[in-house]
Image (cartoon, rainbow, N blue to C red; front, side, top):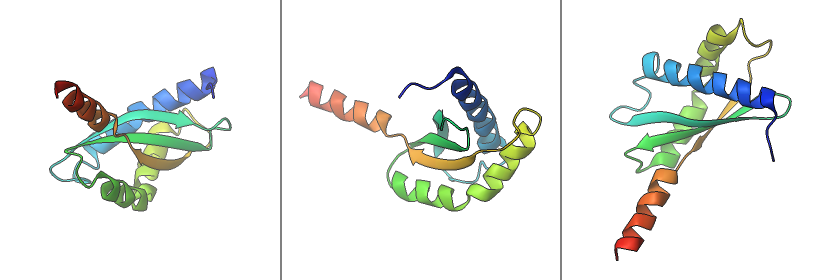
Length: 113
């Protein structure tokens, strides 16, 4: 499903601000791991942001995503503070694990065999 120009704009804005917030205010969220916001997809009504996170090293990544989803309220609050001049309503945040790096690594390993 193709996203509208507005969905893409809001998604890019949310991605930029979330990256900054996670890096500066929640850097202890996942100790000893590199956390990257790789993609943000907005619903057509802009009420929900589906956020893909890349976690390195990625072992037990699903458990980390569950923990982050439990702590979504303070993250959303900070996002609201950052975007209050740009958006009327701050979207609900749902985090997902982006395992594309793991997939490409598996493909590389298979190709080397």
